[in-house]
Length: 567
Image 1 (cartoon, helix red, strand yellow):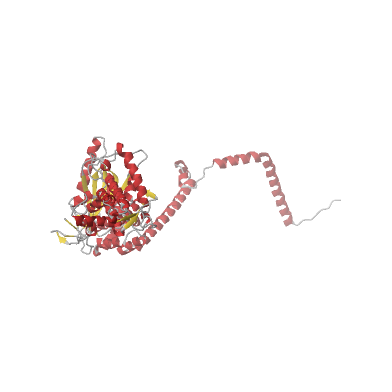
Image 2: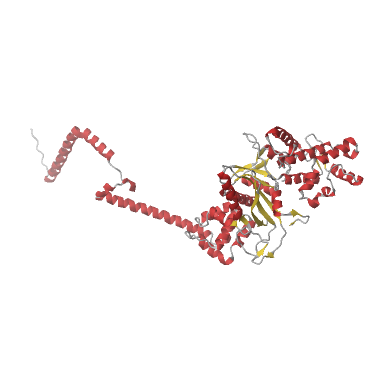
């Protein structure tokens, strides 16, 4: 039985189309079953070898033959340029915002003070370094780059800022995109040849000639840098060209609103393996903090290094500000973690810091006389009254027990800066006189003075060791050499233990832990910690290497009782 279905003409047409599609799909499936594996493998190889064009560097010159690739390169280049343009605009916007924040000189100084880059006194001097009418010119010059000539107001501002703080100078130079000159340019500006404050170019040229002569003989010139400040009388004077007596940092600032100078901060170079010394510069100041002093010392070391001279030590007084300066340079004077050297800012060699033995003797004398008594490690009392009683007996009898003790030594506050008065009190002759009165004459007022005599002899010998300068001297006054090394360091070990045992009272605080800033402990420890693993390096200085007295001779000044210096 055959059943015939009657279809609508429209439905018949759709059915025929479905059959045609099914037939084509089946036909393609059958073909795919035969060639699918090889076609897939071929497509994967082609896609792996196909070069990807994502960045401008992916294109080669031969790719430009294809219009499609050329259009893609053009599109990538436009996109890259647009990104770079936006970055440049953002950087310029940030720079404009930074410059807007420091539109005035006062704002620059305020920001540096806020970041603790400069002190208040340095900020006031910076304001005076630029005249009122030149502030706008200075800021306009800072916002422009490419100009090779620096106006006078910018020179004065840069030199003054660099003098007080190297970090502050780097900060301002960074904010204004290196508009300020490089440090090498500043070092050239610091030099002076007419005796004005600053580093003297004539002295630096002489040092360079010394270094060249030594290099011809394959030798090095070793020197010790000595820094000291000399008090000067406040006085303003007209020298025919300008008024002198104001603070002068060698920056050519001429303003009557500058503070009046009270000190001369001097630099002197003393040859270790030669027989000469030379002042390299000075500055008229009204006080500098530790960071400002450390910054100036680094500048001097850099300028000396450019001449070819090797600086091996730095010597200054043992005042609290100098100890803080040494700390800023990288030293530590704590008795438990003593570090008495720092790295050279250029050569990275160690530079030893030495405290002037003469000044340390004055501090020791001042400590004993002002406190009245100390106690050694065994609890024995050390009294200043024994020395006073010795003077009274000598004055009453009209005879001297082979000592130089006079009224000047007892009334030391009138001439507290005289080194001679301190060393003549802390001497072996005074110690022997005390022992003679106690043991031979049996005077009751000198009973128990043995601890005081030991104290005097200890520091007398220490000063002889640290002040040795003559190769023909004998005993502890002789320079450190191979034959006396063991004896010297044996005594230094004893002196170190003795000083560490000193106390302010019978059960009091050790003197090294006392709150006094100027502690009479550094002579022995500095010498003891100067020993290197390689052994002792013996030198024979022809003049005072570790003493600042050379500077005093150079300045031809002695401190008077009035608190200022005269010739």
